[in-house]
Image (tube, rainbow, N blue to C red; front, side, top):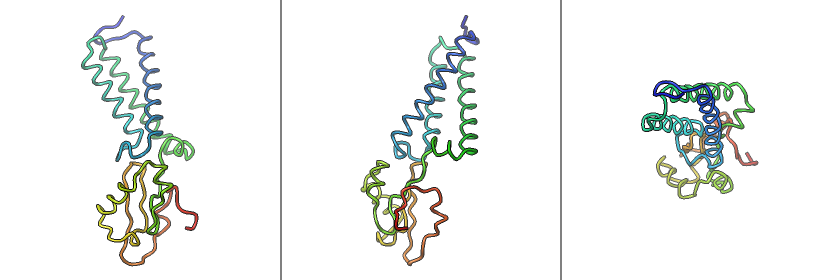
Length: 178
C-alpha cells in the first residue's frame, strides 16, 4: 500500500529499475547528440540535472507520489553518480566509453573541417570563439580544442612560440602531420 510517506517494496523496485533505465537512456542520447548540445556540462551532468529536476517536480506536483519513493529515487541518482564517477576515474576503457574526449578543431592556423563535422560545430561558431578570445590572425592560432564540457579553448600567440604537446594530452583529431 502506498501512502504519502511510504510505498511497497515492488513499487520501490520499479522506481529503481526505471531510474537506471531512463538515466542510461538520457546519457546515451546526450552522448549521441554531441558536445555542443550542453555546453559547459558533461552528458552525465546534464542527465543528472534533468533526472533530479524531474523527480523533484513529480514528487512535489503529484500527490499520488510518496516522499519515500522520491527520496529513494534521488538517493539512487546520487549513488549512481558516485559509482559512475568512480568507474570513469578508475578505468580508462570506461572513461573512453562513457565520456567525450576533447576534439581538435583547428591546428596551426588551419581549420579542421572534418572534426567540425564530427562535433557538429559550425565554422561561424569557431570564428566567433576566435574573436571572443582576441585572436587577430588565423596564423596566430596554435590550436582550438572543443573540450569535453562543450566549451572551446583557443590557444594563440602573436610570436612564433611552439605548442607543448603535453597540453594536447587526451585530445582527439590531431592532424597526422603533427
